[in-house]
Image 1 (tube, one colour):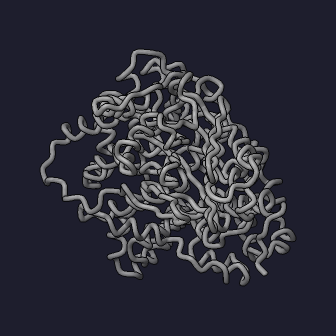
Image 2 (cartoon, one colour):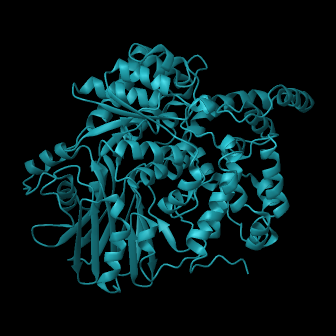
Image 3 (cartoon, helix red, strand yellow):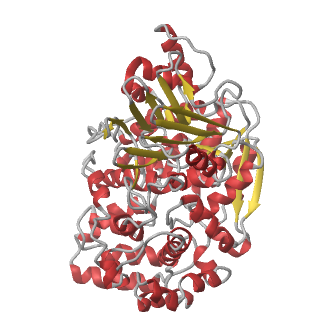
Length: 635
């Protein structure tokens, strides 16, 4: 695992690349390397995981024609190496880096189609004077770039790009529009104008000043219907095989590794699979929130799993010190990022990094095997939409009265409010509305006229495009695809990468293996939710392995008690960042709308935790990155 950076074209002084690499030290504190060629400079900071002695980068081919910098892990590199050796290639290291380089020599740009893992890499072809960039299928490893005139600058994180004199600290208003809607920036853009991301499942070449991206993988489109009669036991065995194989491959390491264990189904399955393929020590890590936030704490279930599989288990309690962490988190993302689970991820990563350098996680299990309540809600909403409008109105009002808002992890009142409000919308807008922090109407009430004039993009475009590839004749399949194409890579995997790399910890996600995803998408959603049960098929597959309490307890998610904290320990931060006079001077949001959100939340009438946190993180980002020599003016 590494941080990578490079400059192609009009290269500034060598100190610029040094500064870029220094900004990435947290991603790779074990080593640093640079390569300078004619019109190109490449560099990396290394977190040594595999081939600790001879796997240094940048790595150059024997003939000096190609040089690679690479961030990630290729889990099938030993099999690929054996195949390349059979074709006459000779190796001088034991690293997966050299396997990528030799595979590129053998197969050119198509080499990525054989790689199974997480990666972002760049190869400089000195003969053709072409730069080749590649990113893994799902988007586990980041790759940002800035291209203007004859210069391209790339890096693992934005903070490194900002060390170069080219990229400007100016707002990308289209990206900010998406952020306000969903809490994260869209796949191809960043919050900084001119700084883009190479999309997941894409490669790109830069030659003669021309930047040409190419897609090499996408979610399998419109899968054929699953046979009406299926053997559920056989399906369960197949799923367990794919997950076990994905876990086995991710145990490749020359340093100690462990696992995040939340106590939920997905992380428990990862630990169970680890135990299936190794008799060695397994170290697991959990965090909790204490008695004051018991509905968010899954440690009792994690302890059962740890005991069942004889792990060396560690626990930490996360106190409400997010006010101290908030600036650190913003600087880790370099962009506004409103998923408050980042705080919990940051905390468990800090605890884990004290013991190991690599950890496995259950991230991706919800999107692949139907873990979110909104998936079942989608089927219910189709029935609800067929009811006469007057009946829906009365039933909705009764439901909202019976289920008031709460600050627990299971805020049924908010779920009902969102469900009823979206009933008249067609699909996929109905589903997308459930996942937004601010819908179009709320944004219209929030944005000042000056900001509204800038919010001209379509935050839902990527979701709609993913929906169109749905199959099985089931709307739920479209929901899976929206989440796999947007929420997973742009929110969850970004969060996992930044929060673990902030502690020089490598995180591996077996459920995000593309073989597991393709296997899952080949199954009809109705199979994955057997018995109208979230993860019904997955739970049935592991019923003889996991403790019954783990399989039976309701989904909680890896969340923090943000709603409560905003009324107590985080209230001073809330009042500082969203002070009425500060909001007025900033000129982005209507003061009366922000004040109404604050008042409703602090009075306990309705939870606006996600919305307030979205606005707080936007203000903090502006202070950290734009008020200090940047440009955000609406004039």
